Length: 156
Ligand SMILES: CC(C)(COP(=O)(O)OP(=O)(O)OC[C@H]1O[C@@H](n2cnc3c(N)ncnc32)[C@H](O)[C@@H]1OP(=O)(O)O)[C@@H](O)C(=O)NCCC(=O)NCCS
Image (cartoon, rainbow, N blue to C red; front, side, top):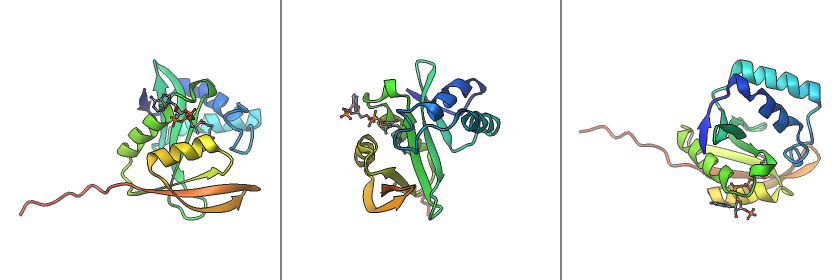
């Protein structure tokens, strides 16, 4: 497993993530094809620095993204795997590596209460449930992870 930035050749993979009913089950459902295509084109064009692609044996199989929380603007973690790669500990490994690469000392996550796989992953990563709230007509769990700050001590 390795993390890398978006490549031009990721178009089909990204399109599948947005239009797969299993991936989108707790993410508001499948994105309509034309809208998904538009989003993929924008992603490929921008190749955002906060967007990691998980690669296994040379193929893209998932993503780890550090976005901006809708309410607070805090750094918000999100992740998605193609269904055939779920249940192998790959999301856990990928997020741990992405967190190591990420400079921010506070990361939050929000996931549907019904999304037990996602909640289990957050718990294993050390996220703490702070509150439940309602958004997009669903109960969401808002969690926080405090990562250790790197101290750069000056020599006396
Ligand atoms: C949320 C999601 C990433 C979780 O994926 P996952 O594969 O369950 O997560 P992990 O990497 O933590 O793997 C844990 C599972 O792998 C199993 N596993 C197998 N080998 C393992 C290993 N070497 N190390 C750790 N876990 C391993 C664990 O037992 C566990 O399986 P279980 O749930 O049946 O007990 C995935 O379900 C997904 O992509 N969902 C769709 C998108 C989504 O809803 N994203 C969340 C919104 S932010």
